[in-house]
Amino acid sequence: MDITIRPARQKEFEEIGEILVAAYAADGLLQLGHDDPYVHELRKVAERAERAEVLTAVDADGTVLGAVTFAAPGSPYAEIAGPDEGEFRMLAVVPAGRGRGIGEALVRACMDRARSLGLHRMVLSALPHIKNAHRVYERIGFTRIPERDWEPVPDITLLAFTCDLDEAA
Image 1 (tube, rainbow, N blue to C red):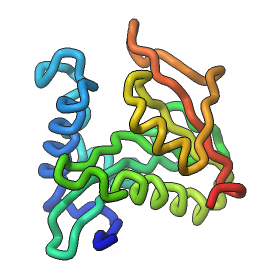
Image 2: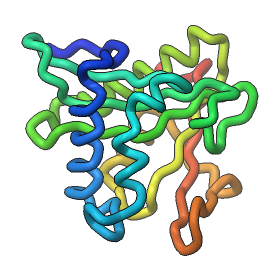
Image 3: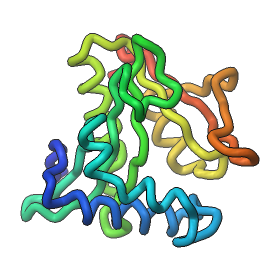
């Protein structure tokens, strides 16, 4: 694969925010479309980069193809992670980059980052209807943990997944 995963650069923050919004909208993850209140959160890349780690996938010419937020324990962006768990959120890949393994590469970069911090598990939350993403997570080694499913707002249920980093490839 001809991409590089690295920390996002400040000059890319606005572009990453728009990639996130476009991907979430295209995948039906924003109930109110571009008027959804979560759009504002997706665009706050600079704020996330101060309190978590924003990783980006770029091709050889530096074009941003996708991004993800890695939250270490104690980060305000760690929504369901325990003290020994890393968490990733806000994963998106541009439409032209899909099918190239970019999403999986971003997830694996988060797993590597968690291992480098001495963590033993990764967790994530996902909407029930994004079955393609679920299949990617399961292929990597994530399994469902229904007892940690939750509702960030009424009537929005997020499914929880975990991966034992000591066993995952």
